[in-house]
Image (cartoon, rainbow, N blue to C red):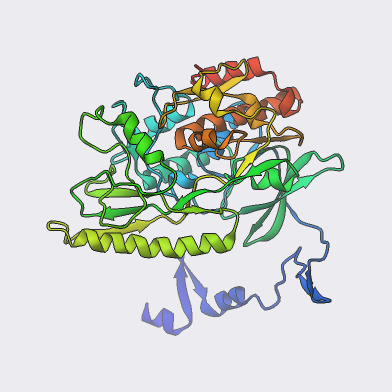
Length: 462
């Protein structure tokens, strides 16, 4: 081995490779990247010249965003035999459920403690059931199930590799591709490979922030909500219901809904807006809790605001752990992890063919085009979600799913949650597949056929 190293060689994959050859490959001295056209300063302005973008891929259905809604959409569409491509900005799938450490699966149940979100959501939970430390508190309504983020990442990676879905990670959707009549024909992405295009017949915007439908010119409402940063702490042997002093009041409502019904004594939620040494909620990993921070109201579309919150939240998280360590018996508690993603709740809400209103969900409205259900949350009962909330009022060849669908703010504060995103994602994915199979626009999808396929995939429609 010493002789080999001295001679300028390395063992790689069982063969001797000269170091000089590796150095030549790594230098990149003669390499330029196609499609690059740098911005220039002209007349005191920064100008980006027009350029042709290389086409990375062509697909029938393009799902932008690999969170809960996006993975549900991609896998559900693929099961109908269409060509599906899934693109995610981070290096893992699951979105806020994994990278955001939002580990609680709520609202899953009705006020009568009946599970009302099934389909893809139940499939995911069953996969977690059989893995060690994958999920706890299954079938214990009104206590919601809690899962492990790393186990979820593993499950989604395995599903992706075995599904036939084409996936691109570390790839950020930054623009829409539209034709001369305004129809969406794909999306533009930025990655280490540069700026590239993916062409598609149907695009499903599961970006969370509605980035693609906004870029395509669809109308939307911009909203602001609390932005927090979730963490996990280790060597902990207690849980607490941390008080919320924020302006939204949702925690108090959630407590009011479930207080007195939790038989195990576990808190129903662990959201905090202060850093006074809170312990948070249990997770599947022994002696590891998660702490769900409410955070202040912020603008999720303002990078300066996001940066400020990110930095301050990390200081606050460290302060919380330090205070927790000062409590007798908690001296060995440590900060296991801070979420790599900020806890953005809402930013853009689509102007869809149908806007779901708070009065409708409070009054138990029924919809002929129902494609998903939500469980009871805070002071609101379970409710149906119509297909029209996933379809832009004007832009063609585009669907939305997840937290950016068409709903009033108080409704969107429920439809943004994990199991509801699974439900709307599954509906959007099947609808996109039907557009390919039946050669129709999203607004012209045969809703009865869509509902039947949803039921075949295990979904509950109320």
